[in-house]
Image (cartoon, rainbow, N blue to C red; front, side, top):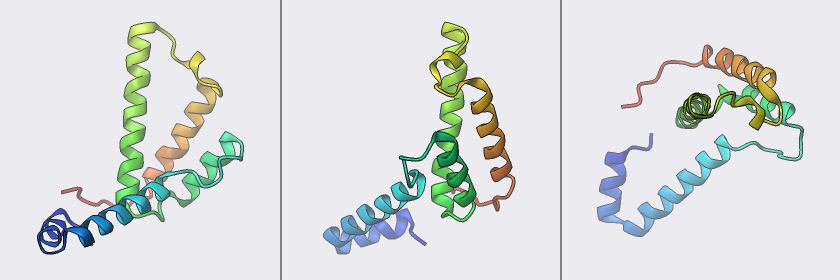
Length: 116
C-alpha cells in the first residue's frame, strides 16, 4: 500500500528514491486511466476500457470516477449557460448516455473502499 505517511518518511530519509517511487506510481496510474489503443473507434475504446475497469487498482478507479463526475458537472454547466450541450459531442447525446449507463453498470461491480 502506497500512502502519504510512508511517502513523507521516505522523502526525509531518501528524497531521490521517494521522488522516483512517486514518479513511477503516477506513471502507473496514468497508464491505468488511459485508453490503450486510441486508433480504435470511440465506442470500442470505451467498451474495452470499461471491461477492464473493475480489475484496475482502486486509485485508478477513483481517478476515473472523479473524471466522470467532473465531465457530468461540465455538461450541466454548459447546459445552464449555453443551452443544449450535446451538439459539441461527435457521438451525440444517445452515445454519451449509453456510455454513461455502461459506466454506471461497472460502478455497481466495485468493492467499497474508503478514500481516507
